[in-house]
Figure 1 (tube, helix red, strand yellow):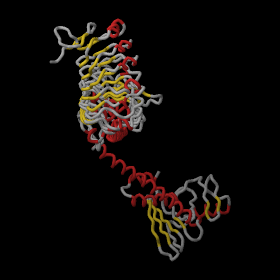
Figure 2 (cartoon, rainbow, N blue to C red):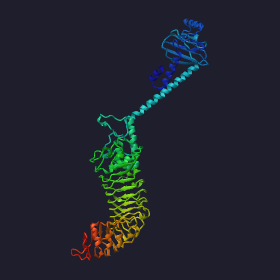
Figure 3 (cartoon, one colour):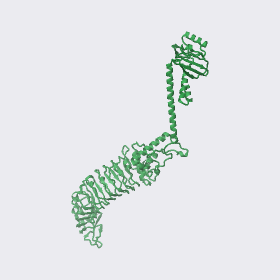
Figure 4 (cartoon, rainbow, N blue to C red):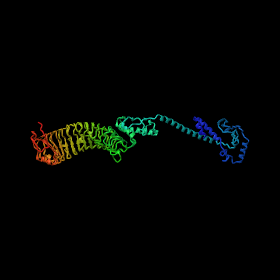
Amino acid sequence: DDVTASATQTDDLDTLLRRSRMALERSRMTWSQGLGNVHDGDDYDDDDGRSNDSSKNEKRDAEYRSGVGNGTEVAVAGATTITMAPGAWNQEEYDNENQPISRQGYFDQGEQQDLSGYHGEEAHQVHQGPDIGKEHSSRNNSAKRKAILIAFLVGWMIVIILVVASISVGIPRRNNPTGPTEAPTDARTRVPTIVPTEASMEAPTATPTGTGEGSTASPTKAGVSERRRREIVAETSAISGAEVVADPTTPQHAATEWIIDDDSRRLEPTDPQFRQRYALATVLFATDEDQTWKLCGSAGTVSECPTESERFLSDSSECDWYGVICDSLDIVTKVELQDNGLSGELVPEFAALPSLTSINLSRNSISSEIPTDFGKLESLQELNLERNGLSGRIPSAWPPNLENVYLQRNALSQEIPDQLFTPSLTEIDLSGNSLTGELPQELYTRSTLLRRLDMSSNSIEGSLPRGPLSELESVKLSNNRFSGELSGAVFSSSLETFDIEMNRIEGEIPDEVFSSSTRLKEFNVGKNQMDGTISADFGELSDLEILILSQNQFRGTVPSTLGKLSNLVVLDIGYNNVEGSMPRDVCQLLDVSLVYLASDCAVNGGSSEFECECCTACYPIFG
């Protein structure tokens, strides 16, 4: 207790140590009745400190009564002499050369008494007080106790210094917190609240501190919030680019803010679902800026939704959101948002969905270029972006497993990249764009599994496909600028549809049409520059439903074998140089399957040499 009291009253370590030594000496010098000590081999009992030896006790009492010493100081080499007065004590130690070593301290009361009779021949003490024994421990024990006490005090002083230092460091931090103190706004407003390289506080969920009613976040919570924001911004920046995420006008910025502030799932960047949740949020912010989604747009929009759990940006798993399909491990594999009123732009964050096998955003109003990052989707098998407002060039990088590509009816331009024709490609539709150039040779050499090819309504030049495509079922190349003759190599046993209308094809119909493609259902070579006769072998194509030979230079008569085509629905041979009349067998098909029958007719004063009384449409002859 004396040591603790001295420590609380001292201002520096030296004073504390000095007073500690004084207290230690006092403890060594003072003992109360009933405390047993050992000195010079004499044993004292526990009751009154007196020896069990009666002769020693008598000598001790006699010396005390006679007042031996009366304050007289005795100094012997190697001994200790102590003089005590009321309120203080003075101790002088003498070394082996009889040189004094003085010590001073405090004592409660008493006059000087000589106790030398109890301490041998080398030293004595003077003390006045009750009848108690006074014994010293050996010099070695005193040194050990002193060392232990000093070590104890030094240890506590170090602890006190460390505590004071940590408090001193913490006060400036509380007075000068880092990061913004204002509450961030809703992510949809896209107000700039983050910079990827800076940390900021997490958005408060209670009353803002500026009102005086809310409570501020604890330092621990604030530290966690700063760490979480830094890590999330770092992760989204790694996906989308730091500049893009920092730009408050981008959907990537809005998605990042939503992940940090509004998403109740509180995902960490290390969570397996973090990247896909961020990517899908980016898709929403990029395509629903004007709240045009028909179904399941974000909360607060006018879009309807079968259930609130299907709404984008809801608290549910992203696998429950409308149009999102996941596997058994909750990994997104398909995004199907066709005909849902999407506008805005396609975002490259689809690449953050590595297991994605299908993207269907067809029949929307998306107006942007196709991101080159789509080429990173190595698992992608089907891409359907038909009937949007996409523009620019088709990216040159495409995943090797791509099977089906539907980009028809957009505003895509420039040449078709040969990388688009992958070894796995089975269907490709680029019709209704503004594509130029020629068909890549990879169409024949690499995409040998191709079954459906549609490049109609573009500005593609060059020759028609010439290589063998044994799996090809449908070829649609109408309304382009193809020229040259028609090659028979493209006609395989699998071919069912062949449409090259409105090109510049010359020459006759090759025999392979009849010998190889016996499963043909549609054959359209209208509006070209072909010539020759209409082959009677057409009658052997029993599955034929559409036969269009109009606006060419075919000559001769119409073969009656066409009457064998019991599945024929459309027959158009107008604007040619045929002569004679429509065979009766053909006219009888109007009672079976034929719906549209057109030719050059000698009606309404026309000068055509061909007669057709059963035709449903007659074309006038150009003079």
